[in-house]
Length: 316
Image 1 (spheres, one colour):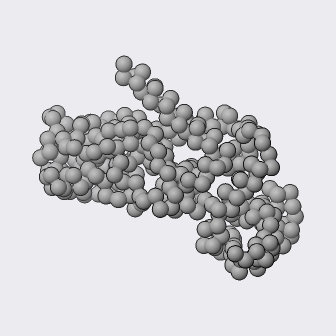
Image 2: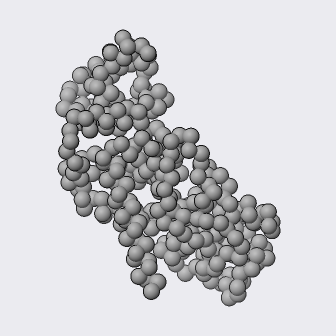
Image 3: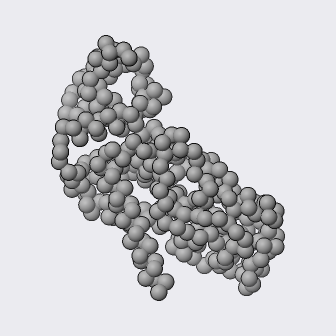
């Protein structure tokens, strides 16, 4: 352990790095820290020298964090949170919170929960800034780098990636899988059999983070592979393909019953064992040390409980 080198890095340096990773702007960071831009630049220069890394570089009109800076982000964030808890014993007050949360969702999750969650969170924390990314543009790597706070997505229970990056998975809502088709489809008026299911082309959803779903492997082992004719980025596009073709789309039953894009399509049970599916919440384990993160986590859980309760009432 190099104590001399460590003694040259203060909380001032860590806070500046933390804010810079959020704003990617010396001017914006100076405003948030109530300092002059030259003071922030001086602190960054000291940190660059201590770490022997540029930390931020200019690309066109934007600042970009170096790989080291991004890698340090979650650790620095955790250290600042722990120091803050040492210095204050006040409970987290969402009505006074002015920070930012970043979530990533699959488009299907957005349909189910985004509007309700946003309304609930902003009602309690009106000065909060909420960013909701597409999971395709910001995935699991964003959690480990501190760029995301949570990911919410539907998935096959066999699909979670390894937990080597301290990613925690928690089931929010259990779900089923169904097959969607055009109401003019030749199979629309009959019970869907496995031969029927395999005799037509399918639309699939691309996801580079998750492994091959259990239902795909089960189908191939017990019967044969389905014929994927088109692969698209999200559920809405897949439903649109079904509206204008005889392609089949296998998806979340909850999404199919909620999404505008699925209105008018025929829903049928799958004619084979597809395993267990659910909507899950994923986060980087150290982030739960932050009271603000724990508060948002509780809001997400409560929003899901309310969604399930509302669906049970509709089913009665």
